[in-house]
Length: 115
Image (cartoon, rainbow, N blue to C red; front, side, top):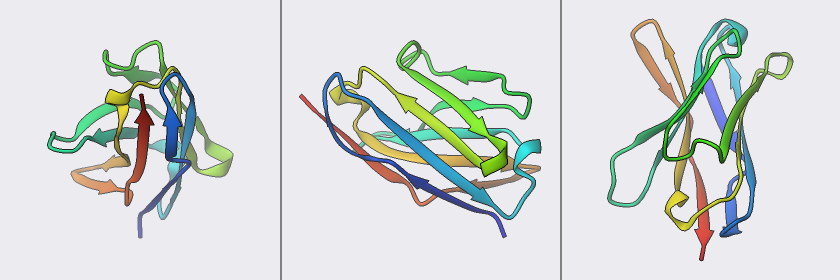
C-alpha cells in the first residue's frame, strides 16, 4: 500500500534553513506528481507546492523564492528545501500524493520557526 514518511523537521531560528524529505513506497514514484502541504495552528491546510514526474514544479506565492521542491527518483524521495524561514512558516508539513481519485498523506512533521 501507499506509504509516505516525512523527516527533517524541527526547531530553527528565523532566517535559518531546513530540508524536509518524504520517502514514498507502494506505488511507481517516478510516474507521479508529488506535493507538499502545510497546516498552521488554527488555519486550513494549504499547498506549498508540487513537482511533476518530469520535474516541473509549482510553488505557492507565499514561499516563492525561499522554498524549492525537488525529487530523487532513484531514492523514491521528494524534498522541500526551505530557506530564509519566517515565524509564519511554523506549521505541520505534509507530503501528498494524488493518484487517480485517491489522496494519500504522510503523517506530517512539525516545523517551528522562532523569532
